Amino acid sequence: MHSDNLRGSLFMVLAMAAFAIEDMFIKAAAAIIPTGIVLTLFGLGGTLVFMLMAQRQGEAIFHPAVISKRMGMRAFFEIVGRLFFVLAITLTPLSSASTILQATPLVVVLGAALFMGERVSMDRWMAIIIGFVGVLVVIRPGVDNFEPLSLLAVIAMLGFAGRDLATRAAPPVLSNRQLGIYGFMVLIPSGLAIQWYAPQAIQYDAFSSLQLLAAVAFGVAAYYWLTIAMRTGQVAAVTPFRYTRLLFAIALGMLVFNEQPDSMTLLGGLIIVVSGMYILASSSTRKRPYH
Image (cartoon, rainbow, N blue to C red; front, side):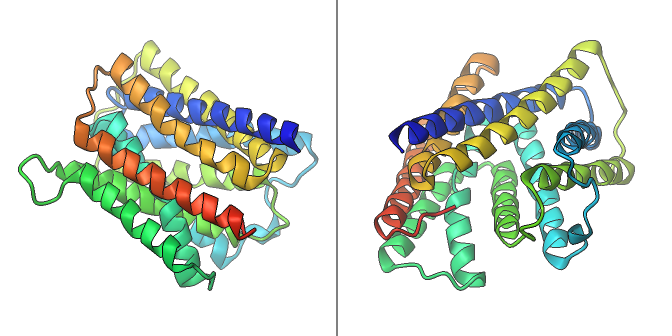
């Protein structure tokens, strides 16, 4: 079991590094390519890759179980999460957007308690509240240096949390590859709708196109490695390494985009991570690991 946990943890770190690199390439490409087109092409690339993966496993591309209320909710939250996170990393520093995103597990635990009837102890409620305080430290509402655009990352975080909750309730007959197909596929019409509703001049150059292709490649790799990580080691041992994504995002923001996270952003990130780690540790102690 120790070797499985080590292998799972290594794949989790690889997945988080790949997600951070994916975000970096999307942020860079979106400086040239309109947001709607970025979402469309990103969705198209991811859909094709997961279709090929599903076909190799002999899985149906369009499974009847996808026509359900739960999958519709998952699609809605996927769109909200992806759209607003692309806007967040495009219009705000990568480091601060990624910091706010780390509160997603806290919202998942909260949502599981409110909508799925899962029991949450008082100490875990306190950890959730403290984690949300960390989010407020990052966005700093009501002070002079409050950045309204940071709310884009908050909406994205809520979207991803809703997607994760809907995924837990998704029909078990659907594989991770099939969920990947549908998760990316909904981005195609959504991106086209955004481009139609708020048209932007479509610009391309070879470099930005390569950046978008790289984002798709790293995004698919990250999803695949994440699946391996969650199926290899114990959830309580592997899941804490999700927070390494923040370290990679801060490093890439500083090296590639010349960002300098201030002390309040770093403090807020620390509060969020510690709160999430506490919830994971308490879940393990109660032998009810958080997924």
